[in-house]
Image (cartoon, rainbow, N blue to C red; front, side):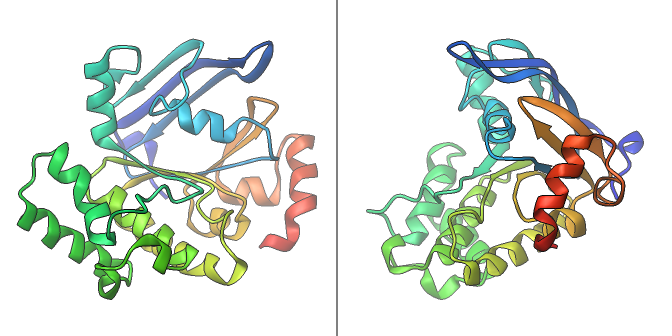
Length: 252
């Protein structure tokens, strides 16, 4: 497990609030994440975990509190936002690949436009990443020609192409057929051992228990547990966490 005492703080959230009208999606959420740490964020549907993840790169604006990413405050300053998004990659539930572009072009687009990488350099890197996720032979196909599991592996390769310091995963397997889940989790397991910082909103309890350094449990827009996987899965403190685990025991 990563030892926070020896790690640099990479994301700091302090008293973060998020409202949708009169509904509080997040209430006073505070958490610090460290370089190289793999954090599983779990909880019932509607508990605020995906909303929290999306505030960390301002896909959702926060209404109160403070978010600092790699020393930069996340706010309306477009330069701050651009700097943060260059360092924070995101893998979505629904892949979000460009359907009119080949797999290779999907991966090279951001490095060429944002990091000003030469095409030959970007393509070489993309092919290496596709090889890493087992899809080098699919480079010239279009997303519609790939399975859901393959598309999600492409989405992971696309995020890695920007050399992010942090990867955010928003329920990356929940849109997949069951037989495709493991091929994506296998790639994520391998990534977890490379030292990249990962925050993973997931319903895959086996993955959270096996791979994560840390488990955060959300309920009703607040963090009720923030502990090790062993402590969370064997002896959670809060009765809401105990009830949640009793309902998902079959998942691990």
